[in-house]
Figure (cartoon, rainbow, N blue to C red):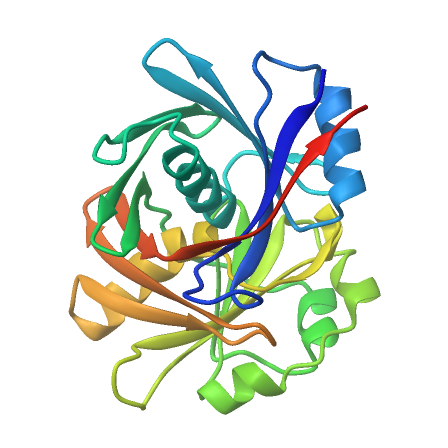
Length: 263
C-alpha cells in the first residue's frame, strides 16, 4: 500500500527557503529500521513520522543517519501537513507524544506556534577539536547536555565561519550552535547549527537549537520575547517566547512536494 510523503519548507514564508523536512504519513507504526531507511532515502536533515494514537500523535524524527530526540522544523512541518491534509481540523491544537515528552502545535494567524522544552546553557571548557574545527576562539562556550553553544562577537563572524566538518564530527556532541547578538532592527540574535556527527553538516534552520538560544539570549538581553535569524544559505526566522522551563517557537511553513512511497 502506498504511503503519502510530503516535503515542507519550515521556518519559511516562501518555497525553497527555510529548512526542508519530509513528513511520512503512515497509517500505523512502522519499524525503526524502515523509518531510518526512508530518512536516508529522503536525504534531508530530518524526516518526521507522525502516527495517530487516539487524540494524540506519536512523533518520531530521523536524520539520514540516526533517530533524534527532538526536532523543531520537522515538528512544524508535521503540524502543517496534518492541518493541510484535513487529518486535524484547522482550529484544533495538535498534541504530539515524543521522546522529549508532550509537544503541542497551534495556529497563530499565518504562523505555527510550537510548545517545546527549554534548554539551559551551562559554561563548558571547549575541547581543542571544537575551536580548531571552527577556526576561531568564541567569547563564550557552553553546553546544553545535547549541543555546544558558542558565542562570537558579531553576526558577520557567524556568517563567515567555514568549519572543518571532519574535525567537527569528532567532537562528542550532537551539534554545535554558533551565535551572536544582532545590531539590526527586528532581529535579536543570529545563529548557525552544525551537526556532522549525526549526518547533518549544517542544518538550515534548527528549531531545537532555539530551545537553548531563546533562554540564553533572554538572560543576556533582559527580554522574554525574541526573534532569531539562522544565517545559513537558505536562512530562516524563528520567533521565540521564553516561559520558565518551556519555550514557544513560531514559524511559517510551505509545502513544496507531494508524493507516495511504494516500498
